[in-house]
Length: 127
Length: 229
Image (cartoon, rainbow over all chains, first blue to last red):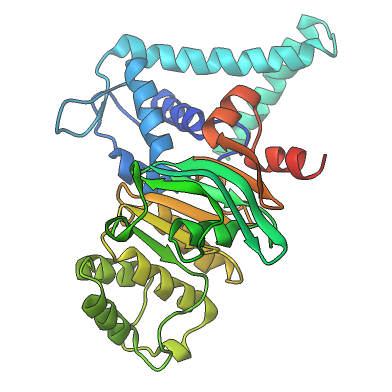
């Protein structure tokens, strides 16, 4: 587990995002056990209170479950898990749209370029 | 909770602390930041009653500091305090004889964590290892609050990383930690709360996650605003 944190977003927000990314790409699976708050803090070299707050946030969003005296686990609810993936994609596209709108190109031009770049990138990954 | 209320301190004609107030919670890491000579160490020593204050009050868990409250708190100075001819083991034995709240199990854990060799003599240690021995000795006391004076100053980056790591690890448990430093880079992600001091005055007190959440600012950003108006 290796995460680089920026200094301007709350650490707990960045931890939640990291977990969502891991869920979206399938590294964390439904029902999988996750580290304790203290273990997570040690692994990521963050403040245990930030780890605690991240877990609280994820519990409220239904991403993880904790039963008394047991380790926390990723939820078994497939609806929640698939919505995490959609949420991350939508967020990334929003950020992209926001920055591209400022330049004001035509949508066709943008889509064409996105396709080209995306395929080139994918190809680069496989070779 | 440690509550510092309006403490002032003069050394001769020099006013080093002026009505300084802040709180430090148990289970949290509070960082006193300021360039050298702004009263950080004096503040820690005042909490320990090593430096008597001219006015103000200090409470530890709602109690005025006195003999019993000392057993709740330890001060880790930035220099070696043990006779240098001692080995690390002998320094531990000395602490064990002197303090009834010495925890040998934790001392062993910390020595392992810091990769210290207990037969080494203090005089032969590098600066980084001297700092680690200092911390190991202080953290091995069973206390609720730990005051660390400049634990990161003048030592190499890897030792700094190790020390930062121990501060958030299970070896600290739920103790309250107060750290003084003028270097924030290594520990931005580790601290709960910041108290910015300048010229013996508290300029600002804030929690790191809140300032990131509500203002989108890093600790460094806030420091720039406060120290370079």
